[in-house]
Length: 354
Image 1: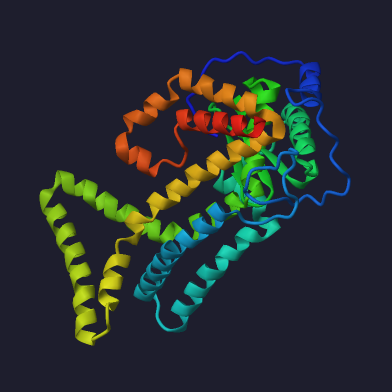
Image 2: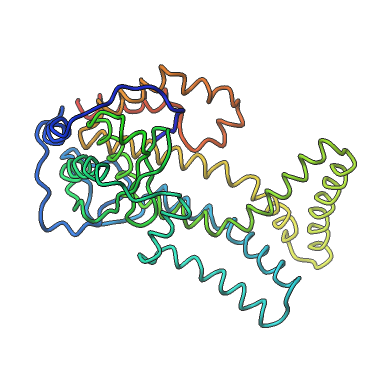
């Protein structure tokens, strides 16, 4: 979900309100979750008309594409790690460091590390007793509609004054403190259903794996960007940066021609600009994943609440700040414009109704 600034919003509910909201809604009483559901569940495609997510976990097409687009980042990171380690060490030590870095990504898929990722990487915390009660009621309602074992996932809270939900690789789902304390019960369920939609397609896993293996390369790009910003203040530094980059690219192409490898140098020349280009399709995939998660929430019976929530954000100027970022902000944005999300949901609802 999007993360607007803190806003005044009515939202004080009694336990009776939460219990009644869990049992009723536009789609009628929520069905009981079957006892034999193992907890893992389906693809990133929208839930079927019956309102249940597929139960066999699988990566969606968008998650698989995100992993493929992360490969160039990983190769760049491998080059950075091996190069920097070779400056400090030599021989077997370099091989050991590179091997440990490659294997470190496997820790992401180990369940024991999930709580550390949620707590220290994503800065989440365990809910308080009162927060846990509210989350349990809302989460049980969502999981009952999806046919998912509610105990399979771990619920967290982000200490933030924005309206947001978070899906963390593994089994973690989080909402912000403000959303938990202020959103009406049905809208809170809609937020949780949206995050459940992310998990159904493996999007949190793909995002975290790409994030992890891209860090060394991203640090290199960040250093380059810092030098570019410095060059705005010191033109001579900017000239040196541009010259170095051009000589690096031309040198790769010339080296290929000298060695006689057909097209190899130009291949490396194109690959050298990958870190500056790949974020664009990655951002597009992220925007598509948000739309798919919106559809999952709608198919689970929360279309009205999700659309109303988006209209509320739009009326409070959420898209105004986005338009102010210009074309560059739109190109690298990880969430679609609110207007696009509303339009996509309304078209989807009309299509399913017909």
